[in-house]
Length: 424
Length: 118
Image 1: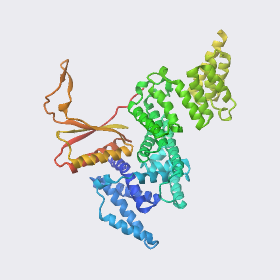
Image 2: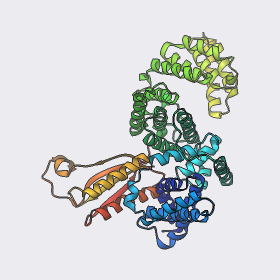
Image 3: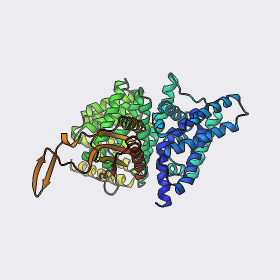
Image 4: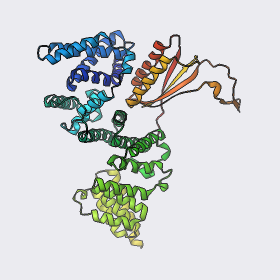
């Protein structure tokens, strides 16, 4: 084994053990940023010792003992500061008597601690970017370098973001507790937002050349699965998981051999991952059972589920998709959702009904520079035989897109419309 | 990366209750951690069958079976960042066998799924 192999092997063990380490320490210290510092120290100790001694038979127990010792030391140092800490330290020493072994490690149900940890890492006090970095670091066990590579940012930037976020958490004097009642759902949406941000970062980047980006999708999926396991009564957590599983199921079909994107309706459905689709459908079913069919994530998942269920593009249930977009527009009104609804209506009812919706969107300021609006409009006009107007719409769309491949395609469609206009 | 773990052993008997319990706990932890997508134990070969192609002929072997050297006893499917994580995970799983079922011998084979290409 080379030194680099050993290093990777240690990080692999670390990723498995880290959630239990940080949640145990956070419970002892009632301080997440500090718990994170001390678990990192335990990792550093492993990276220092294991290359010489080999990875121990029970690496989890080694890391736990190392981390707990640090926590005890820390509390001892602060013994004079507060009597409360004295009591905690005494408890700790008792706990230390029973050296954690592997089997009891499996007995630890860390669900509640994990939830507390995730809520802390994704606290609304922090920016979305900071929440994403902290979640990847504290919940997924990624190193600063790995997070930096995944977000295509310099490591120093991410390191600074993490340090600042931890300082904000430390200085805010937040209690180490699980929010409840109304606060829970507000805090949960702050968590879900971050998970979805991490997923989309990976999903969008997957169309580029970065081979690391699938890691972000996978970590987001993993976070989604963790959330549904530890918060099994939250429909939107299941809705988001369904949305991510169903979107990720198309990964292999999304690009051609040259890495060029393939549109959903033109994808080879044989390449869609059936295991993942099944998991997405299960999660969506669970969201509905919990009364969450109308949630924003569940509705988006239900739309993707319509595609996943269709054996061929022609078999797509467009009326249902159009209805789901209408539901989505009702709870989260947005011109982009409305444009998507127009496309579905066009497929379900024909171009005339769709064009009526699109024409209402033309004056929307946020869509002024959005090339998909004239693209959709051009397509509908073309289908209605209004070729000259279609040509103008495609030209306008071509001028707006920043993507060369798309620009060329739109130019071709403009030329087709022009020739259709001449011959009609 | 998606991996399949295949456990093979010459032992055909059931695991000890201690091992069974520990495996359940490990599986539960791995599912809750979002890493394990699926798992299952397999019934003995005697209750299954083999369909074979040999010498250009297709035949069904429905027992009795000559006891094979190693029989697949179970599988699990994981979604993991890479082979190192798969190795760490398989070692943890096999350590349970070593600790909780003395005398047991076997192999956990880990195999990455081939990537689908469009």
